[in-house]
Amino acid sequence: MRMWLIGSALVGCSGNPATDVEDTASPGPPASMLNTTSWSINTSAGGPEEVAIEIGPDVSAFMLTGDSRKDVWMERVEDPDGAVLLDWQDWWTSDESLTEAVFGYSSTTALNWPIRDVDPPLVEGTYRVHVAALGGNGDYTAGKVDLTLHTKRDPTLTGGTVHARVVYTGGVDNDDAVVTATEEAVERWREVWDIHGLTLVESYDSAPTIDADLGFWYSGDDALIEIATGLTPGSVVVYVGESVDGDFDTYGVAGGIPGTLTPSAMTYVVVSWLSHAGFDAQFTRKEKSMMGETMAHEVGHYMGLFHPVESSYNSWDALEDTPRCETWSRCEDELGSNLMFPYAICSGSDCVATEDLTPNQNGVAHRYTGTQ
Image (cartoon, rainbow, N blue to C red; front, top):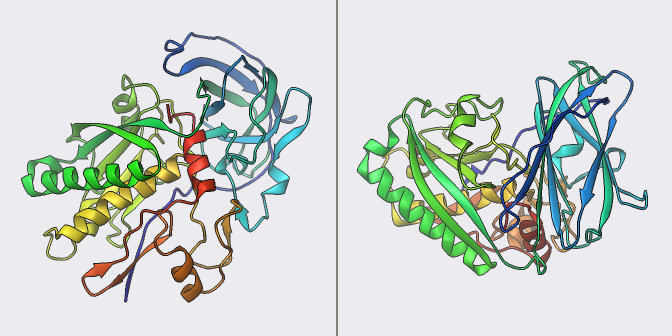
């Protein structure tokens, strides 16, 4: 039996926070799309900054992204009545995962709220997010944090469209067979998402100057900002290359769980075509299908979904309807066809199709602010 890793984001974990001072605001796209506001705060070593998020009528979800030269930490979320909705202390040592925003590993950190269908729906009023910048030792530190707030109006949270830009890197699009396989993979991605009420709208682009080795997968790359700028607001960028930082056992990786909707060095999903095609570099029908499932899987991470169980079988997502299996046999039996299962289950040339989502997983995908 072969088992291939399907990656999630690797965004770090560390510390304590701080902040202080609001600067500029700029209007975003019209209300029919995403509403966007941007400003900056200056952090301090004294503790987190309380950032006010004004939620108007009919807003169903928001995403706050912090971008800095320091690591950004979203420590806590409070509703208009002051009730704590999310606290880092509940998740720091938990064996369940809800969002990477509470860990503060990355200089670009995104918080989507609400995350699950069991989280209280938004109400009109002022929400507060405690935001900090972290130093190298995980301590609160002074620094500028650029903030971007996206809000969306979606009364049902049961259907929506996600825009994706598929970008060929390093001249990969010069290979007609790879282009054809990628396009067929995208059709499989669309087919999987259609099952769950998600509509994929894709476009294609080329970035020949970006290394097809996709070596930026952990630390990001400022060159990605330009590519993400000017796209349909909320677009996910999927880079197709030959390998993920030289690792041919990794099919793909997402730049965050969730990923940001604003252009940044971490605005990416990466997918290796060669890992899917195998040693002969020739795609079979099944390998094209698997590549499409990987795309749907990695963008699922970007939308806030974790693996229902990690391959260590001792940590899980924070959703009530994904079983807490604890052995490889039980996990493969109960979750092997789940879109977010951490690896592909293959025997010979055949692999288990991964296209299932539980109702709670579907709820996370539809609450992602970029699902419009």
